Length: 216
Image (cartoon, rainbow, N blue to C red; front, side, top):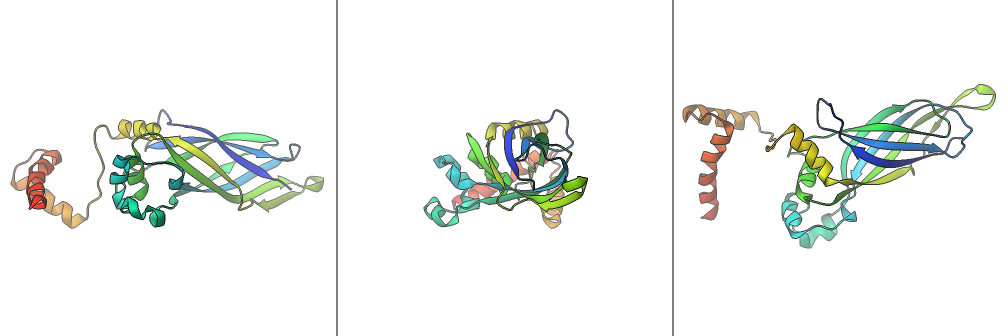
């Protein structure tokens, strides 16, 4: 019976991709080196293991919306679900290495984006939980199927600088916001009424008003 183990060897940003993407170098090894694996329908749940690193005062302030006041982090700090990933692993015997693509969003409505933007420096501790089906060659060449044990996992510390470099390439000196259509329509009307050439100009004109109201 196959017994697969998983390790993340590293991560990189592909030279050409339609959307911001990280490639995790995933190594899969089978305890029985002689056994032939036809294919693996692999599923992975990717989590951010937030309790496995320290946070500077600046990072704590930027994570207020995610975890609340630092005094409450003992109750609010827990692993963040990032995404589910599915891929098909081609045939191998003893071990194989493949690229696991991780599409990344710069939408600040997403908790993962808020977290990556807030930590600033160092590494982001990740936990990968694996499941799926293994199709392998059994006795007398018969094709058999086994499920990957739910205990199979891997850890990896992603350099935050890699994520920052990737986002700076796709969104140079900018950020991405999601607005309700009603809010966008009001901003669009404001932009047209005041003959403002760019959205940057719209927010630059509105922000002093907002800052004055907050200070009262």
